[in-house]
Length: 135
Ligand code: ZN
Image 1: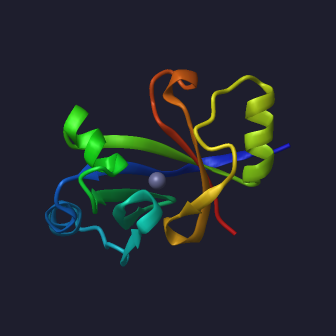
Image 2 (image 1 turned 135 degrees about the horizontal axis):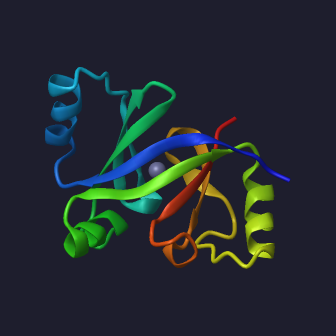
Image 3 (image 1 turned 90 degrees about the vertical axis):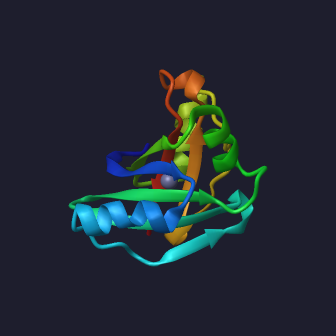
């Protein structure tokens, strides 16, 4: 069994990470963490903690990356919501057993060293849901 612990972060697709970061730091007074490029997902990421959760800004590093494709289709904005789970393997197995459509059936690397798996929007009422486990 697994437990869903909290909203881990909200992922926001942006065209320009530096410019987007300024809104959160200069206007809202939040403090941004360092940036990380996740080559596998063709994305540059910056986390901005907010209380018990975080905002994740995502800028594509390639025109064919998932964030670039999202922006082409929808414009900038919320791309996914991430829920923290205590055991990602158990969560994937349990959701699959319940007939939930997974994008990732095996956990993959997420920014900040998390183990993540995406759940298909067809099974979540229309949102891209990320499950995230952090050790
Ligand atoms: Zn995320």
